[in-house]
Image (cartoon, rainbow, N blue to C red; front, side, top):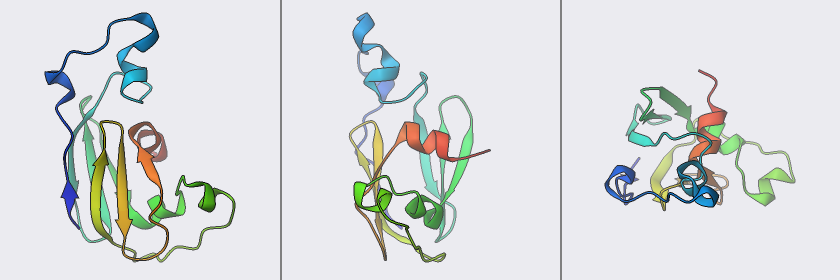
Length: 120
């Protein structure tokens, strides 16, 4: 699995200060934390360390089963338990795009979605 990080450090840029664009809505998350690190645990699992110190693991098959694309939401998703990722890319500063080795790879997984998905 390859992770391509083209995200900029959110702490290095000036954050919006107006009430209509507070940092939580600007970064597409529900609270003021960001992704600190993303790493591969094995061929089927990766983890995210958030800036609040919480570390969450994500099994790729679970992620694919919860694909947020409209096509998958409209039909029952059958996933290979051993699905792998050929690449995980950042989408701006708010999401990840996973290229799975099989099945649907259309979904964009926002950080708020990922944070809510893991029950840790």
